[in-house]
Image (cartoon, rainbow, N blue to C red; front, top):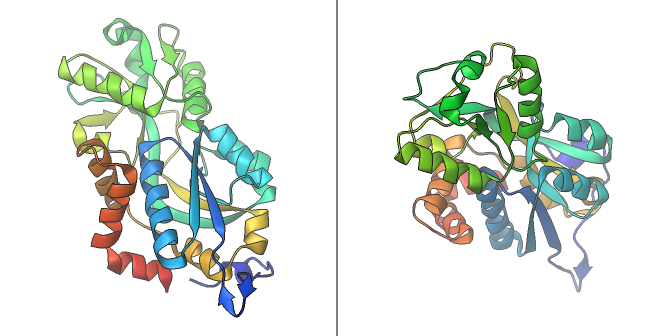
Length: 282
């Protein structure tokens, strides 16, 4: 890819030099505590440590604090920005203070998912069978764009017999696992890529009103300060960072199914996919 600093018309600042040698700088990565973003952030951090000798600080927060933090310069970069739909309100609020390097993954999507044994296929059918779901849609953290879209879905579809339950990615996954183990009906807020699509037979409920939008991308976002003052080679690498849902899914499965620490799962993926990593470094 072209140099993002030149592409964006931002003056590049080289790494600080002492005695002619480049001094590694710290970098702070903000991300939402979703399994997908745990995977991508740890893989990115592993390469930043290996190839650039950077001390990386990873900070997991809800979506609102993530966007506020990068706009204020508390975080240098996030690779967890879902656009144009999921995080639309945050981009509208903070976008003019940030630098968007573009997608690091294509084809992400969101919606409400149910096990395939559930016999309804559309959100429009939920009110009539609310009792079979205990009147609940199992959600995630209340600041997530998916939750905002879910609240809109309640209004658009008039889901008077249902309640949106907030919690976390882990709590949602645990509720899904319990329901599937008992062959019970459950509807959860969902997105892809996510390991649960490999672990369970799921389907999205049809969304005829288009509340949850079409497929979107996950973007790499820089704070304005880092875009202006960060090392040019690091920013070029961040601009090149791009992988597939299958790549991300393999890291997620290592963490969730195999019980690996995220750093260990990232290390295995990086070591096994050096051809991809080297492409990011070109």
